[in-house]
Length: 107
Ligand code: HEM
Image (cartoon, rainbow, N blue to C red; front, side, top):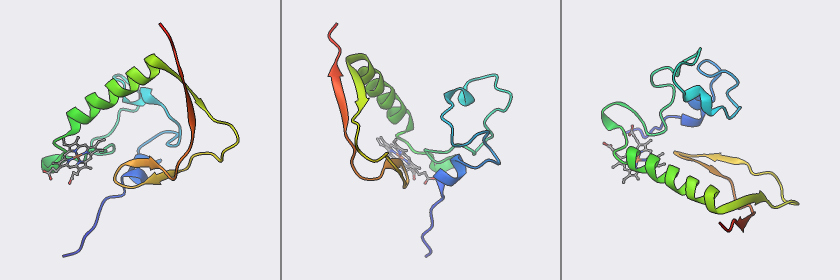
């Protein structure tokens, strides 16, 4: 009857599994890396028999939305506001609101 959840953010930032864990290095996931990602060290969608059934949908949707946003807009951080901080829940999200400016890139 005890409810528990895994601390994904802690695992995904653990120096035991990641070099420079706080740095954004997308290349760590590319094939042929000196330090390949260890099994179950990166589990944003869980793992094993209860793996998220929406994983492929979510990954595809995120790529499409991100690509379209970057293709259509230049995105700027609005100056004069405190830096964004993280709120690690099941998913990682920003704590509170922040403003960005979208400038439409005409083709
Ligand atoms: C960024 C988006 C998403 C993230 C990070 C995410 C993450 C997760 C995680 C961590 C679990 C728990 C796995 C476990 O219990 O060990 C889970 C389960 C689940 N997710 Fe997602 N999910 C996402 C999107 C979606 C979408 C889009 C759907 C449906 C279309 C979905 C449906 C489910 C279902 C039904 C389960 C339960 C699977 C089971 O217990 O057998 N998720 N998800």
